[in-house]
Image (tube, rainbow, N blue to C red; front, side, top):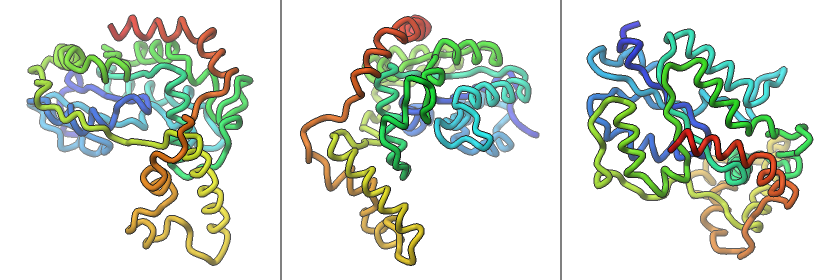
Length: 277
């Protein structure tokens, strides 16, 4: 395949909910002398041999809830994908983002509902490991060790620092890629992928998703029919836009999950922050 030399390929592989959309739309296209391949790995075929190639494809980190059967855990799929990339491209470079565990869990659950799913949070994440997302899936140190095993160099960032210290991230990014620094003045910092926030919005979205599942089995149109999509009246759009501001109580994690994150994952998050410094 005609593409850039292997040493010039960098893969940005997520994780989910760590500013991927912002990076793909606002930052990566501003980098000079880099071929950006976004969500379409076939773009590697047409990548110029005279330029560095940056592949930004979040699903490479695995799907938290869309795994094949027999079902692989999210972190297991992550390791399989990292190994395949490392072998295929002879250990290219890697950019990987993280988010504080409690914020990630909450954001993942909202995304789970955005995609039409219906389980309550207590079935989505369980401390005993029987949920859709498990505590083992959130072991960031293990993910970093996997990345370091199969990639030559790894740039680690956190969603929090990306948001609060963007200019410092741009310096780290340019140094890592060996390119000119992107000026922060050229970055559009508008918010991407705004989601549901309140308990009322979350509960309403879950209920609408259940109604939609029922309609799938009936002769009636679903809530994702062409007319509703055109009018912006799908369950997700209704809850994000029409119900915005309704319900002041914010959706929060259960107390036992908060306690677990604070006690059991504190060192894991500290390790990531040191790597991202």
